[in-house]
Image (cartoon, rainbow, N blue to C red):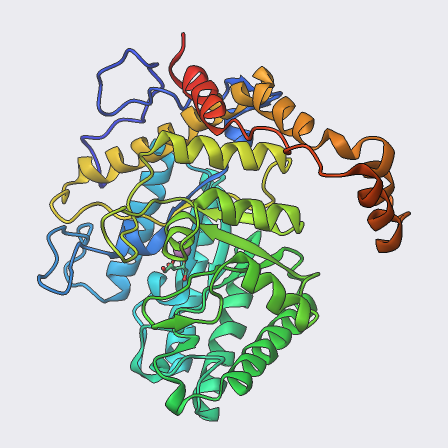
Length: 438
Ligand code: XUL
Ligand code: CO
């Protein structure tokens, strides 16, 4: 046991003051017709939880993530991370994990050796999965950390680097299939540019699509039946990234005929970096039938980068769960792509961060279900568009009219009445009433 001082985390309810207990996440509690566990397939992000030690541009790691291994960056260390990860997920009741290839093994200079290590570690992970029932939500290839990807992977100027990226995607797909992953993610961390003075944007975007098409073809040929995901992000590390936001990524997928195989993996902090709310990018994905999975975290209103904080803001989780409930749930899950703050470096902090995030989403689920059940918001929206239910409005939405007919109608009508109050303040008060009323 690597965390002997941490018990299996119990649900103790909102009045509990035990830091190592859930206050809202009660897996078997039924909300809106399903258990919380069914609504909220939570996943652990291998990279943050088991690999990242809190280093930043100004200082080295504060947290020790060796998990008892004598030397870091070895296969012994990689196995210790597997042990730590599975004990961690079991104690929290987390059903899924997400991984990049290079999170689970140290990358070797030679890709053949890296792939051998990947085979060895996934054998070990599979044993643990079979013993615990824990599953893989999605896999991905890290095509942004190694210096070879400085100009991107699919978008690189170097055909040799493109081939290396293809080799990594091929292997990561094989591993995802081996581990039964539900999804495969493309996060285009360096698929973008710093200056158009050295960039052929059209060429780069077409090459990204080529890599994705080959991935779909190969993935389907080896039995991958899940969803491919694009995880949009507007910037960081690149100044401009091609998968700017959900709307941009969906347009790209449609342009290249990839929309049947791909959905969105929406990350809260990426949406806010794009100048949207989290809810906005969820809605854009949902109305296009492409809401697949969620990277559950939050940003900081005062900072302009991806802080990857654990979800704390209940308004945000509530509006997220409102979107998810309205969309009929996710085919993917809620991956905590989040990290402890640098001074939160203890084992207790690791657990408390996940308890915060899981409770924040459970509470958001409870509140979102109440907003829907209450009906005032939804009824207001329905009423707001009711002029399209009959008469000329009904003709418009049935596509049974022409510009000439509408112009005649307008000419006879005189000036239209004002369209009715949007009642934003009233609706915000309704939400507060539901959030904080007894
Ligand atoms: C980076 C990010 C990635 C992706 C997977 O901002 O979110 O960790 O989730 O590559
Ligand atoms: Co992410």
